[in-house]
Length: 416
Image (cartoon, rainbow, N blue to C red; front, side, top):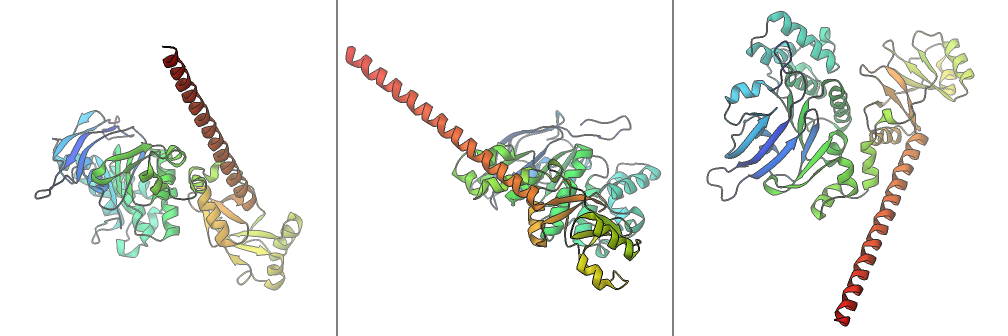
């Protein structure tokens, strides 16, 4: 596996599965049957398929939590099929559903576990723990000494990802890592993973049963049938616009154009600025700012510059010198890595035609409005319509060519 100058892996590595097979004793058929696949360095590949198709088994054979019955595994060109499995796992990050943190260890101890096992010096481990907590959006000073039971589900998953990245492995395996949290937290964790990948460029293999999650996160998606037979292995856009067969179409489901909203990020559309004020601003100044803004509302930010409340003119009239009861709490926000589908859902949930965009620590960065999102939907639908027309035209030309060839063949036969 590739290593950096200080002795640990720095970026992603290729993964090659060559006729990988798993047969359990007493079973008449293999659970995984001759899977061959090449995963590029630095890409996110999603395994998606029906329950029991073997996607988690295939994932766990990569780090040999499940030993293959046959076939080979190469990581960064190195055959790891016969390598000491314990040493192999220390070079591969692994994150699972419900985080899998050790309850008797603090957050810092959980993250430090693998670096400690591989012999990193204490100062380097301490620095790495703080770096990773910051990277996954948790304040090191606040979370360093906490125990898993003192964290929310979303916070536990962030620590789980930090622990998986602790020894800076080139490969990260994720088995339904966000499956046990609520939908809003899940969206934010997906955004966080996408943001992290922009910085880290790991090779990530990710198992999910949720096709929308696969579209949102994956560079490529492997749609798996029974025994992990590959039905289609392609980009999300290619699978949405050109599913290989009825089995894949069943995963895509209805509304492929709307699902393509998961392929476009908030950062790809126009983010508008919005008039903002802070809790420290005098009430009269807030009122003057709103009156001079030309809008009917203003966004109140908290002391850490995070969206806090939407204030309308009537709210300020009723405030009577205090903002405590004025305005409507910001119920949802999106990051620049969120998809347009996330943004559309947030706008519709809020029922006010806009959603605030935030940075990695929740700080305000702008607003995306309904008009921008609707225009994007129209563009996708129009693109789909043009693609369908082009495909229809190609079919007509093909049929015409076939008819012409058949007629020429018939004429040739008659002359003969």
